[in-house]
Image (cartoon, rainbow, N blue to C red; front, side):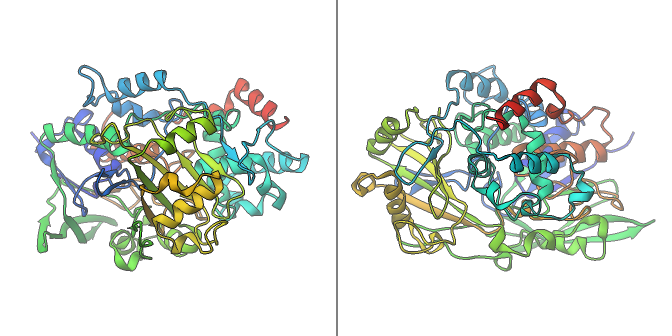
Length: 523
């Protein structure tokens, strides 16, 4: 009788947490055989959310979820018990919440006059339609490492559609044409309702409290070793019959160096790189520090493994140009309901029923979103929290004469009030915490085939990759689904699990969906 392997997961993001769950649920591996090693003090990776009413709440971002496109995520969360509702899964809880609070954004775009932009059409010319159709039908080998601008004319980037699509999914004109095409096909259902975001589903709280904590709690109950404050600094390995075999790991834990022996039959899963690597927070009085990968360890292991091994990917394709991959977000904590009240009057949306409110003439291309309250488990009833971000934080503001990158929280609020034509006194007691993320859209950088490794790369015996930087045909990065799908694929392959990974739903082949998209495109 063979002994069950020990498994080491490097990085405590949603990918590793999901992988551990699949090992237990579908691979019947004892939880005690699994260790998750996380460099930060808490698990969750990019799905973060922390703070309190006194010091202020902060979250780097919020990932949209849908019912139709998150096949692997909901396959997992149908098995994870809710922390809030006895007898319900996280999936059940989330769907019930969205039945009560349906998305229907009434103020998706705001112009320079603070007027809601009526979205009667996508603003396409015939040339735009033809170019978009050509791009969507071109195979990825032909698109290769081209940019969106290589396929679409300058006028396209002034259309209503581009403002809606780019701010919903965080695309820039210089990003990968391959990734843009994948989004067009994968999220084609959203094309016909992009102005209302009616297809978007929300978790009850921020995604750390709603997705990470229930999963972490379940894993802990299964006996999984959850090890924070543990940085893996290097991997020992050998090559045998042309295959790389990890034999050990060097760690730094609470300031002390440790070594882990990876024995024959044991497995190692690595989150190769992170889109929130080298993030930094500012405050009401200071702008976030400008960090790079030199001040972090997020890319180090992948770079070392990929050197001289083409099948292990090419990190440099993604981390070589911060100027094209960064943006800045901000989280605002309020103890006065006046701002939420005025936004309700202005937008017509109760918190949690709208979507991104984008100021289309903002130099920073700023957007904000007011989620259902409370947005944090420990948030008091008399406190409100909202989040925002800007795609062009290197540009000088319309109301603050400096780039967002140089602004503190107070100056960001001043810019926001300028666009809304609100008296700045309405946010006089607010606490705004800005966050700089130099690699946030690095997954969208133009790339060649092979720059991303497969979850289990060719030439690997006991090592798998889980992250936004692996290759999954037809699926879209910058989603929770991508990390969960990568985890499921890697686990099933290395553990030899005889269960199908839920396939990517081919919505783009539906005649009904194509017809609706066509009608929208020709309005």
